[in-house]
Amino acid sequence: MLLSLLLWQTSTITPVIELTGRFQSPRVTESSGVAVSRAHRGTLWTHNDSGDGPYLFATDLRGADRGAIRVSGARAVDWEDIALGPCPLAGRQGACLYIGDTGDNLERRRSVTVYAVPEPDPPTSPADTQRVTAAALALSVRYPDGSHDVEAMYVSPRDTAVYLISKGRGGTIRLYRAGRDTWQSPRPVTVQLIQTLPIVPKARTGRRVTDAAIRPDGALVAVRTYNEIYFFTPGPGGRLTPSGHPCALDRLGRVGEGIAFLDDETVVLTSEGNPLGPGAIHTVRCAR
Image 1: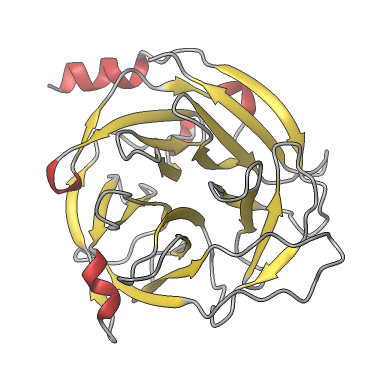
Image 2 (image 1 turned 180 degrees about the vertical axis):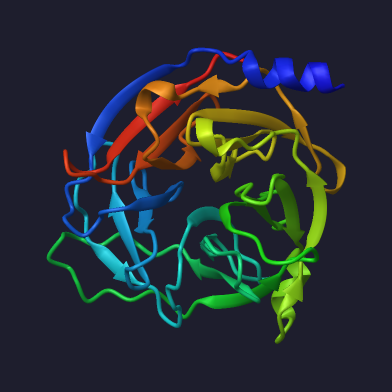
């Protein structure tokens, strides 16, 4: 088992990577997550890491500045990820954007927050600065095994559960689940530990989880580290089984964090800016 795990992690494949653009908005300095809109063709949603307010930014694969929207009723302590999924409350039609205020570099936060807000219409232009979303729902969560730095989140289209994946600072990478019914709780909810993922974190090589995404049909999950993409097939209870070999991202460097499915075979990646220029947007196709 250990040998097969080592072979799986080291037998990476070389993907087809294309630079499609760079963020043109001067406000997007540290894209930490990305979501692909299904209602507004060509629109990507992103947000900054810690240090910004509760803002969503609309862009596209070229990085166009399409303006910002403030998320009503939300705070931004350390936003790490954004995902698209069915809204958590029964009877609400359309998709919601889920925002994970789950970053915790020192692993000391007693609870963290996931917000859900109906996907808004994108702003009309960068000058459209007064837009505000509908009031966000807030889910306060705790982990059953102490505090964790979590930068990866996805929402299953099959059962509307929120899945959170730890970064791996404590030596293991773990998958947690918050069911749809937990959104009714007025108090912090202890999420369910599903499993320890078969990815061995290694800070020296960049093997720490920075994001995750689920395909719109719910049949495939992509987990991103700084230098790789791992693919998994979801099973009963949300457990993940490795699917194919990891995809190598070494040539992109260690500034990338966001990942989302663009279509069934392609993912889009976003990165933070640096002194050499704005953050980049790439598409990646991994033969599995």
